[in-house]
Length: 140
Image 1 (tube, helix red, strand yellow):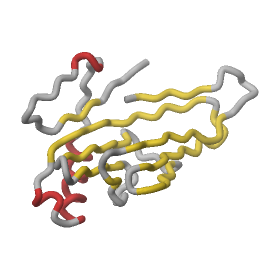
Image 2 (cartoon, one colour; image 1 turned 90 degrees about the vertical axis):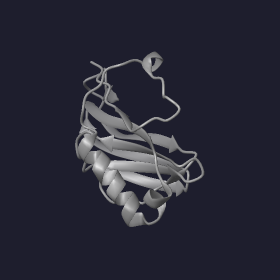
Image 3 (cartoon, one colour; image 1 turned 30 degrees about the horizontal axis):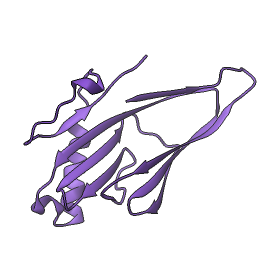
């Protein structure tokens, strides 16, 4: 997913952009500044957002266990582009057993999720026994 934010007026600059995220699961403690993960232990599923580029200007504010805000400091720019990989995959009891296991799983997906896939929302059909799916949708 690519988000482009820009001012249509040269006299207006952008300072901050905030994205609110709600999850059925619980947000996991951030171990890497490239990813945010939501773990639903009851459904044995994990959702993960991976930033395509490391963003030093990102602040993550955990409001409660299932709601968080992503805040980007745009530092007065008049245009910015944010690319996010979005993934959903099943997790086992072993994966959820310890924070170390969860972090290993998340780190592995950061390394393997960089393949570009182009499709529309109508193209997405998850089989009953799905495997890891990451999408990188590039919009110009």
